Amino acid sequence: MAAEEVDLYELLGVERDATRSQIKKAYHKAALSSHPDKVAEHEREESEATFKAVTEAYEILYDEEKRHLYDTHGMSAFTPGGGPGMNGGVDLDDILAQMFGMGGGMGGMGGMGGMPGFGGAGPRRPRKGRSEEQDYEITLEELYKGKTVRFASTKNVICSHCKGSGGKEKAKPRQCATCNGQGYKAGLRSVGPGLVTQETTTCNACKGNGKVFKEKDRCRKCKGDRVTEERKVLELYIPRGSKDGDRIVLEGEADQVPDQEPGDIVFTLRETPHDVFERVGADLQADLKITLSEALTGFNRVVVKHLDGRGIQIHVPQPRGRIMKPGQVLKVQGEGMPYKKSDMRGDLYLVVDVIFPEDGWLRDDATLKKLQDILPKPGKPIAADVVDEVEYDEKADLKDFGAGSDDSRAGPEWADEDDDDMPDGAQCATQ
Image (cartoon, rainbow, N blue to C red; front, side):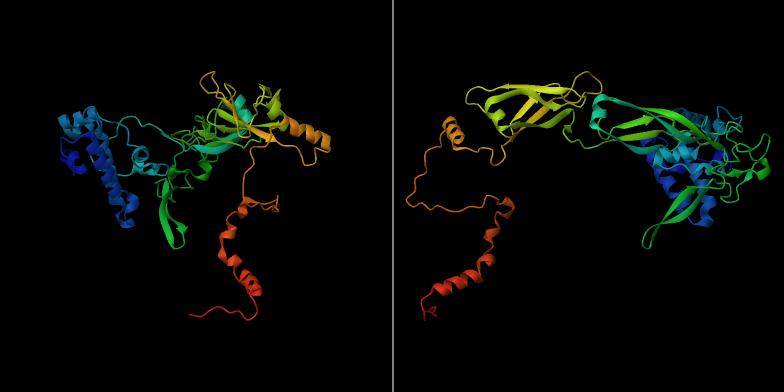
């Protein structure tokens, strides 16, 4: 088919006045249906050609400037020497990554045959390599003050001797026999009992390059791998006020891969539980443990050691008759976590927990009498016609509350007791 016979609009199945959104949608549908991994092996070659054709058609029609050139001059505008053409090849990995979240392993498709008359789409933009992600455990104290961590990282870098080619100077590679020059291999992977899925993986033999060197022609430094290992000291800066789930990105510090931008190293912060403080946002909460005496008479002392080591002192002057109750909350403004982008801080919430004396602390009747005279008198007695003095269990547990509502627990035993109390010879009347 001659180049001038190709109608890009017809190829994508859109009208000539289609919007960019309609063109993108049509390409998405066409690319999925013609993807080489979706067809049988004997249809692979035809599918690859169609896939590249619709991809390059999308490249032209989605770009307003290129679309104008096509509408004005046709495909001659994009053929070598035929006008303001596109001299590079289309990077299908970039298109797949942008449209379907794919990429990495499709590099070999850049060299497959397409429909005549299609050129490239301008300078090739290196796609970005895979990022490395890991969790980083950090204490609340470190998050409060901020932290800088230096650590050694060993990663792959482009071989400085062969500049990433993998071969000696002037040596020519040959097509990889393992992947037939594609740079990737399609295979099946088990995902469960009786279930498999098709996946595309980078060819191990050529490392996704599609080409290999004979052993005698390989680079003496990287042995044909195109990359070498390098040890580097990196610095991880964690701003004060950071929180659980924050991501710290070291751009471009992941393994280097030829023809790709290096990926990032990404640390996700994981805050470890704290013995004293609980954090919500920029606020902190802690228990304020006081004695019964302090609850009744007040206090002035350090009540908690803060995350930076400072003692937090509270002065509670106690007016006559006023007491601090369990569960009462004191808010201390500005003593919470710092905000990352300002000098402001959250607040500290102190929840009162009254610690009562141990059993047996009061040993003589005289002191008990003084205490009874000081403390408020009991309220008005409850009047009742009949009064029973009962025994009690002071070690009861509310977990048992409601258990007595099960009638089966009071069945046969109670019935036997009732029978024993009945007069001799007494029987239930029959109906």
